[in-house]
Length: 355
Image (cartoon, rainbow, N blue to C red; front, side):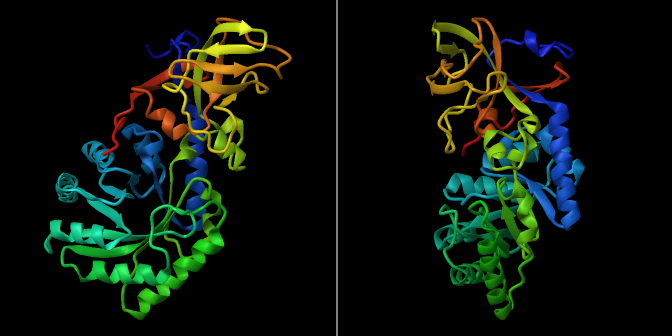
């Protein structure tokens, strides 16, 4: 696949990125954080491509957010120096890799329990300490300490360890709960001050909360990933329009067994099976009344019963995924285009980095 090739000539299924739309998304979000005076740290799990993270940093991001150490290693090897890993680190091999990474780059990690803190403390030394943020559950019901009092207690334990530095607070919030997040953060910061503990970083997060980040007054930075491509869930959240979705999965109609059913060559290995509350598996751009009702490994079944016009066998369809981050991890490469002509092909360098 060469530069200048028209996307209609690409074999399907293929994930394509409209480069102009992507660049506009980067600028819009970075401008918002510049205007509210808040640091922005993009999550690279959406694209897993160093060249795109470089675009984000060049636009003004302070560093990057990774989910796993294997991702962080890929990006450190690509020259990134300010890396936050937002996952509890456990296991001797992982901790050894974490120590080696901390010797190379500016690294921060999270912890939400004493077991993780003890494991980190046993690995890091006073002369090369690791920065640790206390992860707080402010309502999302995933990782995180359950109260400001718990956050203070864990911060004190981190601060007591010679090889660790308490560096702040972090949350991945439930969407549209800025008041609850601010209440949790402000109470915790007050408790920390009473104990004489500085809190350099207060990290808010999430793409669904992206443009309401200013409502969390205590936050010093925001983390988000999906915004660079956007997806169907972001459109539903009111954060963008379908025209702002840079990623499309292009698929071909390979069968029309009945008048109201089509089958595409893009199954669960090409389109994410994440529903995220939707009843089907993506938005068909050219046939918005169509519904992708089922995915098997290589087949997508499409209900055409509500379509006044129906696609023919051999026709190529553009699909906006429910969740773009998962789709990136399904492909070895993403194809970038401008006005329908290939502008670049990038290897998904951190694909499969789940450890």
